Image 1 (cartoon, helix red, strand yellow):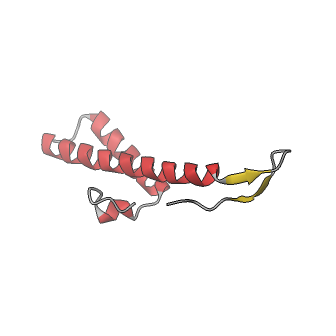
Image 2 (tube, one colour; image 1 turned 30 degrees about the vertical axis):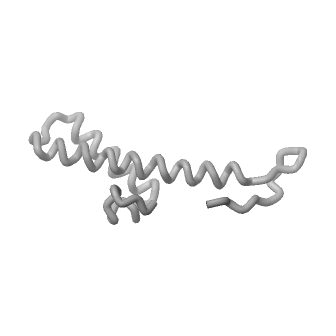
Image 3 (cartoon, rainbow, N blue to C red; image 1 turned 120 degrees about the vertical axis):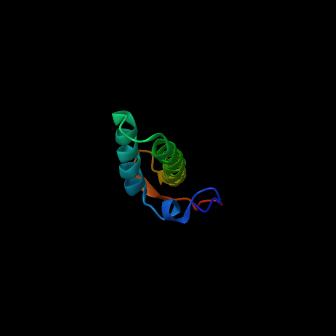
Length: 83
């Protein structure tokens, strides 16, 4: 993901790492123990992480959609992705 709105550190995260950080942020926000400014910053980062995860899932979905199956439903190959 190379969106200018996504910081480089988030753009380099795997889906799993981004989800783990997002879960930590949600837990911290739900605890109610963060100061207001830290809560706002955490919320903003969480929104960027969520967008990154959604983009990663969309990429994966496109790849899965391109897998070709034989009549019995077994994978036989893949079609090239169009960018």
